[in-house]
Image 1 (tube, rainbow over the protein chains, first blue to last red):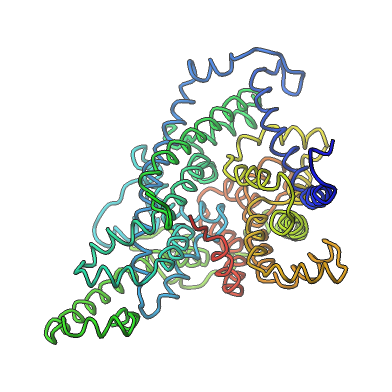
Image 2: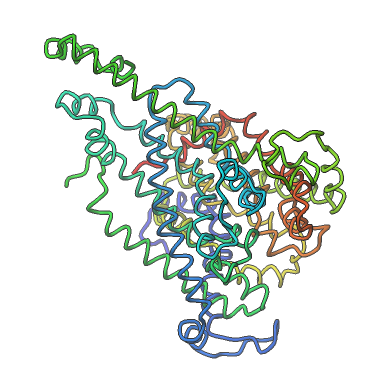
Length: 301
Length: 302
């Protein structure tokens, strides 16, 4: 039982495990066990809520993938947000980061103003933006009316409901922006000087120095954004409750409804496992495809 | 101009013969023009980011007939302060504020203790399997919340904790991966000689953590406390799942439920939203330095 470790090493192992014990217990009981339990539930159904489970094999999965239109609608809505929301978010954050990363007067004030919305509670953000998007008297359509434009219905318009939520997401771009700023400040100045001596213009410097040097940070933000995007919930729950016409019925919202409104917890567990796989595969694909695109300093290419 | 100053002196002299006066002037002029353009862009975006805050407070002080009018009234006249006491009296506001604070303060205390212990083990102690477990912890940070949501609910129901504050407090006693990671990064930046010296002086590992590491880590601990407080204050899905009695709600949940029942009373809705927002905004302004330090700590390289 000594695992081939010396007494000294065994003591170190004991002490190390002892200090890490809180997390190890938490990891086993709040992560590992629930993941396994979730899979077990997904292979069962409730006869009635709270009663013992009944084994049904893969039929929850078959039903989800084969018969449940709302499952596919919610998956489509979510992927829409992940693809368009995350890319828009990242591009805009880079542009703002480049603007902020200059020796301009008052940059710290801009940084504060851009960051502030990210600390506002999601409930407050959602309620506030319901009012901002109000078709009659909201901030946006009021402002448009001053220009003589009759604004659209935003969240009540099936075509615009998801873009509206992406727009609202821009308000909380500050977290991503600040990470980009830190990344930009880490790029050594001598690279820009060298590029300038070689006659590179501002745009060329961005393309050939800034973006390659920033690529690990971009990659990090894409991963975080994609994983977060798959879990989008509160905005839809509070602002639209999935409407209009299920256009903001996101995956996490439909999962929540199954678990806590229809009390079909095994069905929700099957959804959770599909989400797990989808997120894992998406992350893997991004990791794989990023190998060629991301530049790490000190790495042989 | 500024970026010229940042170049090294050697570089400047090397550049000198190549750049004739004329092109230098036009270069700095275009630079100035670029700066003006940046300022205009940053200022416009700043206004757009600030407007929702203004709209929030402005609406919260309006009479109904000033809310539903075009062209919009930007500054309410008269200021209707009654929106605040009226809306807050519609739900157990003080009780919900207390619940929120109980959760937030307990979560902060538990998170600090547990995360510091684990981070210490992951950064300063050397043991077999440490890096594998650390990697496992990092991967759990990418796990979607929904994957464990249903079994966790069932666990807490079996414990009889549904409709109590416990599911929102107790899990923090087991370390929060994000904060463990953050503290670990900070602990790694402290010189190792300190630990060795303390050990030679007869300090135990716990003594090293308590007497050497933690006193040096106050900025990082402050960041963790701040982020955890905000996390608990802002949390919505946790209270939504575990609490079902208005006297047990947190403020976030209580306000969401209130808002969903009052229809078009936008003055009230904006008043309660302001009440939910002002504390965190105030906290942000008082602790900006801690925030910036924290963001620098989480600014992960590579």
